[in-house]
Amino acid sequence: MPKKMIIIGGGLAGLAIGCYARMNDYETLILEQHTLPGGVCTSWKRSGYLLDGCIHFLMGAGKNDSLYKIYEELGLLREDP
Image 1 (cartoon, one colour):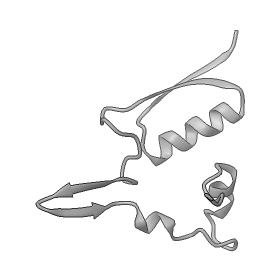
Image 2: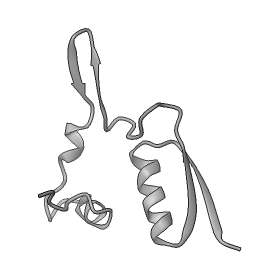
Image 3: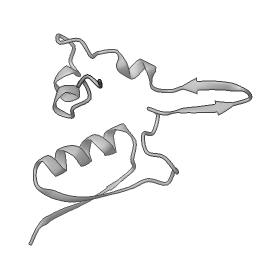
Image 4: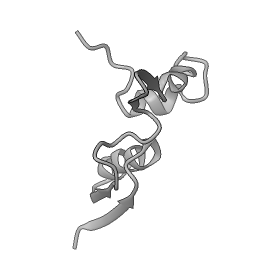
């Protein structure tokens, strides 16, 4: 029987857990109440302004920073031609 996991929440943590689960041969189902995944790592418009809730998550992407290994494992640091 395959290993299965249900993840509640499609924010950064839920998406990361989903990636790591798939990397370890789990079938995954991510449930998200919003229309888009990403949680606080998204942007939205309010009163004519664009609010970017993600830009501060780009900090810590240097090779000596604590989040670098996680970003690298999840493929978030690949260059997009």
